[in-house]
Length: 79
Image (cartoon, one colour):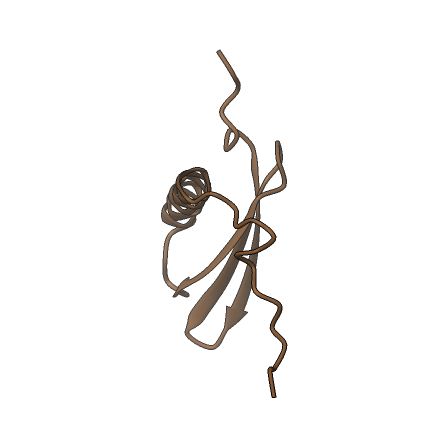
């Protein structure tokens, strides 16, 4: 059985007024997510939310294939 990628996460908290900016990084693969929560949110709830968001982003990345070279678009202008 493969290890849970979110078994160990690193959480950075930054208080901005009445809000808490949260950044969470999976120690196994380096996936990073960020979200904002009320400053009064319990640390256990912040950790649970961080794990849930990491899992969501990971599932979303598996479901969406990466675009090929012709699908990325050049971003240029045609005049």
